[in-house]
Every structure is written in C-alpha cells, then in structure tokens.
Length: 318
Image (cartoon, rainbow, N blue to C red; front, top):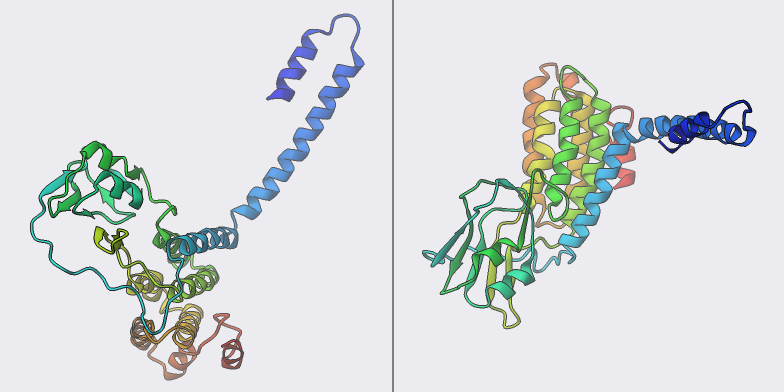
C-alpha cells in the first residue's frame, strides 16, 4: 500500500522534468514488493502442507498438556480419584444468559474468591457448546455468589481453542487423518503422518497424572467440581475414527497397530487396558475387511512407516 501510494504521489509531481530519485525509489519498492510476494507464496505453500499443520498443532497441544497436567503419573497412586459423591439438590442454579458459545476456559482461583463458601460445580466441560439458558453452575452447601461475577470467571467463544483444551488438538489431527482417508482424497500417507503425532501426544498424556476434576482450598476441602477428560477419552478420540476409516488400508492398520503396541509397552500398566481394548478392536476390524489370510497377516504387521518398515525396526525402537 505504501509503494502504491508513493508511486501515485510521485507521478502527480511529474511536470516537464522527471525527478530521478522518486522514480528510482518507486522502482526499488516495486522490486521489493515482487520479492516479498514470491517469498510469501513459497512460505504459504510450505505452511499449508499437511505435515506443517500436523507438527504445528502437535507442538501447541504438547504445550497445553504440560500446562494442564504438570504432574507426572506416579505408578503407585495413578490419577486422582474422580469425584462421585452425590451432592443432592443444588441450592442455586446459575444459567448462561448470554449468547450461546463454546466454553474456552475457566478461572479456578477466581471462582473461589467469588464464592468463598460451599461447593461450586461447573456444569459444561471445556470445549462444550453452551446454549443460552442452559445451566452453567450448580451451587451446593449453602454457597452464595453474585451471578455476574460467576459469569466473568468463564470465557466463551464461537469455536474451540487450545487454551485449556488439549483434546481439541487431538480433534484437529484426527480430522486431518479422516479427511485424508475419505474416498474422495484417498491419502493414507497423510493419515500415517497424523498417527506419528498422535502417538507422541498420547504418550505425553499417558505419562502424566490427569486432572481429577476437583479443586480444593487450603484446608483440603473440595470447593470446585468440573468435568475433565479421562485417559480412556483421549485414547478413544485418537484411535476410534482412524481405525474405522482406515482399517481397510494396510498402511494405516499397520501404523496404527505399531502405535498401540508402542504405547502398551512403554506406558504404566494403569494405561494399558484402554490400549489393549483398541488393539482387539483393530484386530476384529482388519479380520472383517481382509478375507484372504495372507492379506490379513500383512495388514496386521506392526510397521512404524505403515508400509516399507518391518518388525525388527519396531523392536529396535521400543
């Protein structure tokens, strides 16, 4: 815009004599714009490649996982126990009276300051779509708080973000894999690239103590309850759709089995039941697709490359 404006201004000042300096500056600016445009096209072409998007989303998701789940999983204790005690009828129901939107974040310390007594339960989970008039908070044990202040402790927007929602990163990567596996595109290599990133993300979640869905005060009393994804939720999100859409492609089934077996052998025994359940589902799916025994055996080989690797390379990696 500056180059265009400058050139027009210089052109308007040309009368009988052509000023050489403004013309030279305009020519230089035009050349610089051309070079910048070529660089932009090159950068955009690389940035829009599937691997660039996948690695970028995975990197941001890893950062969110480290922030949301800072503690490593202790084998002897595991995740925190989920709050299952019945609280009875709430003494106050706070409804969402603003425009509908997706719950993006909530501020735990701020909720405790706004409601200094009793127990507060946040009804929707981060990432849920909250309708106007839907319950937003349940208050128990005589808790009282200003509804406007409670609303200011949560943030809603038009779509999900990664701010406090690591599952959304999984969702983006799985969607890329699902699109790649659609009959219209038929790009199993992109699905394998997505599984590379999902394996790393599942491992990062699997080695951490997941949130128990409760916040306690300094005296150890439960003051805030909220819904949060479990380990089984992450595994189901990362594997189920890719298994359903990709079981008929040996490249995807082999890479998916390699991912699940790697996680089964490298994570805590507390994490393995969900992994082994997916392995069994994959075995049944492959068996139902491939009627020829040799094709079935080929599709059930563990291969970190999908096709082109071998079992020996997997065992070396493990």
